[in-house]
Image 1 (cartoon, rainbow, N blue to C red):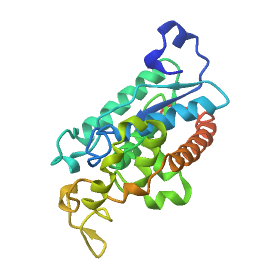
Image 2 (cartoon, rainbow, N blue to C red):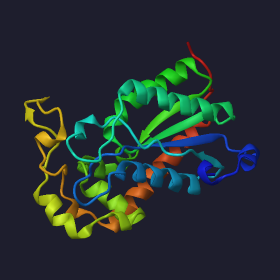
Image 3 (cartoon, helix red, strand yellow):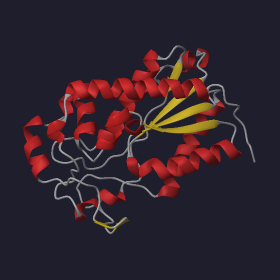
Image 4 (cartoon, rainbow, N blue to C red):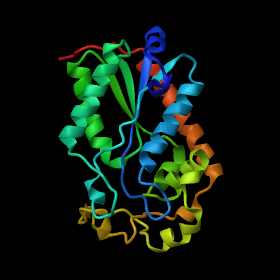
Length: 243
């Protein structure tokens, strides 16, 4: 059940025990992929899991702006502070819980959100009338997880499968030529770069020419199956303050 397209009366009648909250970002993804890549990918994984899960699932509207100041030099990128982001996620989870959907998986599509989501989900579990768990889709695709860059083969593949009209395939060569093969500017185990423009000319990390709709289908299948397995566990958790 997608809340954006559902009436309140149908929402009230829902027997769903769990909810999904997609979280993404509005940030540069090279010359070939849209600013909303992270949000589109998170929504696609959430919807795929909801469709295949054995019981009804509520899918909340996506949160489209996250922690993305590292991409600030690229036009169109939007960002918020970690404190604002955590508070917003917590408020939305609290809203879902108020309607009885008090077991929530936050489906994340942006690496910059990971630390904040880990913290806020723990805070929700400890202090609120809800249980929340973070899920980052590209961590749940098996051996492909090691191939994750930025606007590289994984993100581009998922888009080519789920939202192909958003990918400028005629720009893939330029995206690869102006990109970097690694995130950051490293000395030993220390990343000296603060923002992405310091190590990638056009915002790309990885080679999007290695992407395909077929790989995107595999990524969607793996991540959706992993999300369904997580839903099995989350639905059995007892919501409520632990503090």
